[in-house]
Image (cartoon, rainbow, N blue to C red; front, side):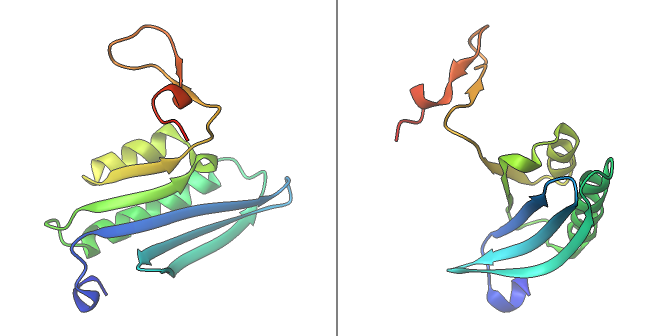
Length: 124
């Protein structure tokens, strides 16, 4: 698909939708201009320990062998999928994580010792 679409870079999307503790929907797609092409999805019990991480890691491992190493890959996620293990799985593939976070968030810059609000660095 990447070769057919002649993509200079690949944007993968990982999304999660929850319905309380009842179920969790996971979706993986390839973002192309104005659309996302779904390539995998699964619904798991909402309270199943580790189900999200395992599913995501398995799909990313499959894609690692399918995508050319010469093309930059960006994985777009929502803050609901923040798992440090998922971050490292993406990094191990040589890919780049781009995560949407809430404006109320904070981070600790390399040059500082205390957390600073995101809005100081990324105003609206």
